[in-house]
Picture 1 (cartoon, rainbow, N blue to C red):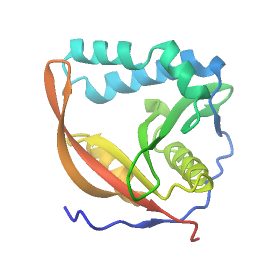
Picture 2 (cartoon, helix red, strand yellow):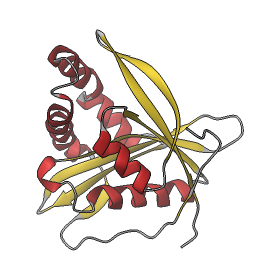
Picture 3 (cartoon, rainbow, N blue to C red):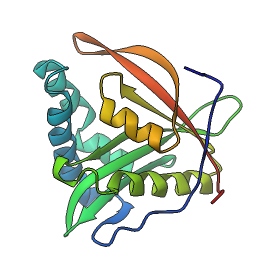
Picture 4 (tube, one colour):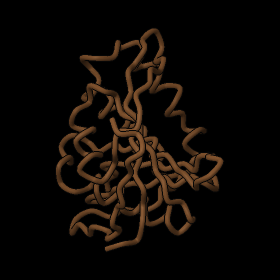
Length: 187
């Protein structure tokens, strides 16, 4: 991995005819929890113990935690809506760094039957535009090393593998790849 390399991500927000990307509201919380549960089960059923998945989802996707994410400064929680139904979401959080304005894309989940339709890209571009508006030019995202579809998605969209690290998830240590993307307004 080349840890010094970053790339410029051109901002031009993808418009999808049947999908609306918007900031989440309190009314979206149950749908966000549903999307997280469905995508986690599909993605990690074979690699993360069911108890660890259950405990992680129960602690991370509590309604009160998400309610705070919807209203907190320095957090951008977007939902993708199709036919009046939330089919995906992305959550960006401002992170402290001593020399750069940084954010982390902590979640980007799309329901399985809505994947590969440009929804993830549209959420990513919408979030990047908001980050630039907040003068944030660096975004990180961490992905389980074995989650190859997610890794390919991030790499296609300008993220560069920066480092690997282990992370406890219940009784397991999960190997993660941290990606970094430099955001700019170039077209």
